[in-house]
Each structure stands twice: as C-alpha cells, then as structure tokens.
Length: 561
Ligand code: WT7
Image 1: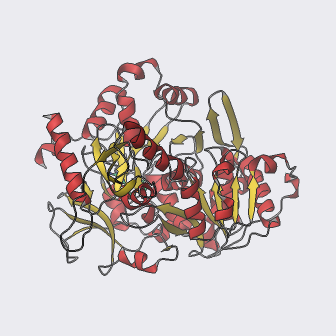
Image 2: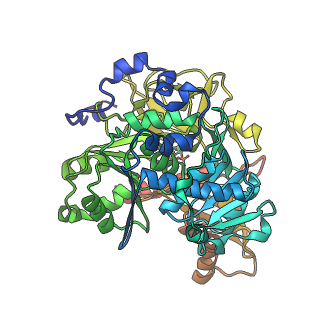
Image 3: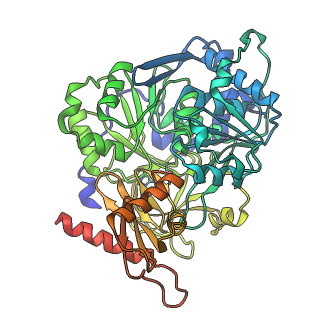
C-alpha cells in the first residue's frame, strides 16, 4: 500500500461542519444527534415532519426547497409549498383508507411529485416503497407482491408497466395527474402527522443478493438521526447550499441522500429529470450554481471520457463532490483534481446500512483507491472466516459493529436472510472484502459473493438467470459481471440453447430484449455468449459463476497489457 500513500490529496482549506475528525470520533454519540432534531422533546417522531415541516415551523417556509429541471422545464418550490403539497397527497391517502404500517408504492419518474409522494406516505405513518422509474412489469410485480402493497401512486405513463391483475393485494391506484387536478385548500392547515416510535417502519427498498429474488430492506424512522448527521458532516450541507444528488429515489442513495439528508439539513435540492448527458449535466451545474454534488463513478467516468468538454462550462460554484456505489478509480479522482479542481470524496455504505459508514470527510486527506475511514460512532472490523478480527493490512470480510441508527429493521418476511447478516456476535457482515491500513483507511477488494455491480446498480445473477430461462430457447444460464472501463462491470450471460434453436444474432438479440422488457433495462445482459455446457461443481452440480467471471477478468487484463 506504500505506493498509494505517496499520492495523498490534502484537504482544500475552508470551513466545514465537522472540523476535527479525531476529536469528534472520540467523543461522539448518536444520542447527541437526536438533541438537534425536534423529537428529542417527546420521544415520538415522524421523519417527514423532521425533513420538511419542521423548517416551516422554524420560520424557513419561504426558502427554496427544490429546483426541478427537465430539458426546458424549470420549477421551484419553497419549503412551505412542499409541505402543502405533501399535506394534499397525505389527505388523499387518508381518504383512500391508508393507515399506519400499510405499504404504499410510488412508481414515478424523478419529479417533485415523486419526492412529495414519498413524504406524504411517511407523514401518515405508512411505509413508502419507491420504485425505480425504469422497472418493467416483473420487477414492479415482484416487489409489490412481496410485501403486499395496497396502494400505488403512479402516473398515466408508468401505469402501463403495472400488471394489476397479477398483484392481488393492490386495492387502489392513484394518479399524480388526478391529484394535481384536485383542488386543495392549504389554509385548512390540518395536522396530518402521525407521530410514531423510533422503530416504526419508514421506507422499504428492494435490493438484490446473489441468490433469490430481490429482498425488501425495511428501514425505521430512527434512521433520520443517521441521515441528518451524515448529511451535516459528510455532505457538509449548509443552508445556502444548492445540492444535487443524481440518483433516483427508487434507489437508497436517491432517498437517503437525495431527499432526507439534504432536507433535514435545510439545503435547496436539485431534481433533474431525464437521462444522463454530459452537456446537460455540466450546464445544470453552471445554471443553478450547484455547490454540492453527489454522483457515482460511472457518471464521473462518462464525463471523463468527454475530454475537454468541461472547459466550456463554468463549474466554479462547486465546493464539495462525493461518490458512491462502486469502486472509484484513482485515475478518476486524479482527473477531477487536476482538471476540474475539486476532490471527489468516496463514500461506502449499502441499502441495508441505511446511511454512510465509511467516508472521506472534507477536512481529511484522501488516499485515492480507498473508500475512506469509519464515520464517527462507527467501528469497522476486517474478519476471517471464523469471525475473528484480522490485523491491519490483511484482506477479510468487511464488517461493522452493530447496531447504529440507520441499520435496517428487517428484511421483509425473511428472518433467516436478516439473521445471515449477523452470524458473528456483535457484527454486521457486508458481503464485501476489504483491507484496512494503519491509519484506518479502508480499501475495497471485491464482493465475497456473485453479486454484480454495473454502473453502481446492484444486480443479482439469479434474478437475471431465472428470467433468461423463461425464454423458450434458453436451457441453462449463468450470469456474471464482466470488467468494463465505464460501467465497472457489465452484465454478461452464458447460455445453453435448446436443440431446435440455432445460434443466430437475431435470436440472441430477442433473448436480450426479452429480459429488458420483462425485468428491467439495467439488469438485461449487454453480452450473451452461447456455450455447449456451463461449468458446474462435481458434487452438487451448482453452476460455477466464479470460474466464468475469472476467465472474463483474465481476458480483460490481457487486453490492457
Ligand atoms: C454495494 C452496496 C448505498 C450505496 C449505493 C449502493 C458496493 C458501495 C462502494 C464504494 C466500492 C462500493 C459494495 C456494497 N459499493 N459503495 N464506495 N466503493 N464499492 O448500494 O446497491 O446496496 O450496493 O455496493 O459492494 O456492498 P447497494
């Protein structure tokens, strides 16, 4: 690791919310955080109240809460307007019989109404289930069925991808077009907040593992302390910030760091609709004078591949940039630092962890290639196969001393799966492999299972394989991550074909589209290779994905020498 240490990037001088990492780390407790939020007075809380309504009550109703940008459309809403709209949506949910603990799904594009729907559900004590806007029928169906969602908020376009007859629990579908067309008298000022206990359910995010269907990771209202404190120290949010998180709220980054954390800290957020475009992204930063920007390695690599394009834009408003979701290459950090003039601060966490655990704080040196150091109040362990802690410098299972406020409350309906994260007394096991140096910096070494990470999105091979073999031509399938310079990994499928199916380009394309149409675009294999047979273990006959993956890694290494 010594060669890495020579490339340290020092902090940019400035005034940051957390001034001294070592001192804070020594004295911090999560109880301190609760004191800064309003619920410490009563013990009861509501995350939607803390996120938006509190600011209105404290005199910040006229502050701009959000900018929405989508091509030529630009709307702004103040905190008071967001509160009123949230009340409107909440009232409609109540009128439709939604009660505490019900699962209400939200299937909307990245618009203010998506954020407002999530808050409305939470405000009345129900559990919000936000879905990524690119999901197709099966992905939507599997998630709502898994936790028996009763109500869905969607729009006239996305409803076409909701297979209603296959979702028996779904009683009501609400359309944002209709809600928006219904008048709401905001002068009524009803008190719609359902005050709940810390452990009551807040939001459910579905995420993939290496086996089985996606799992419903349920978070509790107590997570707001984690969201608030990490927003304050890691995102370094100040009231005057214009903060842009590029993730959709259907992913945990988009809800926790796109909605809760910045608004708990009273930032003005940017909601950007539409697809990635280097020109539009740079233009947005210039136009809205974005100060704080949270994105992912794939996006930074795509911007980097555009060469000098950044020179045509004024990016001088930016003061703090962060990354999450997949390994951030030192090359990308160095590009941003040398060409764009800012450090990219990598952060590590997972859907299950509910908030940042390993971070690069703005006051601390960055070691490119490292994900950073433990957040105050968080203890990292690198464990061997028996659960014993390994010394600095050894590769092992990345574990975190449990619990902490953001940690998931349960995996919906699957206690065994939940328990499997806690097989060593006192530890949460992440499934990642890592090494920690003497100074506490943690370096990602890969996954400990077959999970694929493409463009920062977690893809379970089993889900894709199951869909592939539903196609009549496919007999068996194995799906692995193939190294890719932009997306980190891309989804590659190895398949065997039935006797009557000749291997043609058209057939392979048809199979690819079949997965894309039924499951989702991000999980559809970018490459399909037909093989005579798949490698399997001798005894149990399990498909050896690792062997296929290793061969892909070796091929890509050959290309690079
Ligand atoms: C997995 C979690 C909640 C964050 C968004 C992804 C990988 C996450 C990093 C990082 C290398 C990372 C891990 C982790 N991952 N952050 N900074 N460097 N890998 O959440 O979809 O639940 O995936 O993403 O493998 O286990 P997720």
